Image (cartoon, rainbow, N blue to C red; front, top):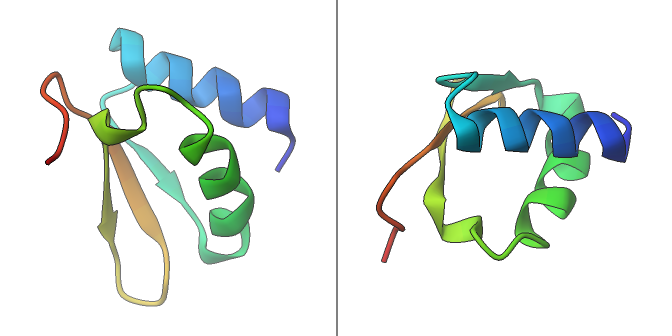
Length: 64
């Protein structure tokens, strides 16, 4: 996945344009590298799926 696309998806999750985003196992590491660079990293929740895929959601309250 391209960095620009990942950043666009993360912004859409943040502003509510997307309620969740499904990341396939093959793209997980690329997606996570960009995610952990963000100041609001703790606001994102990843829900692991069978087979290694992850569904990401944005939370108004950061995780602890």
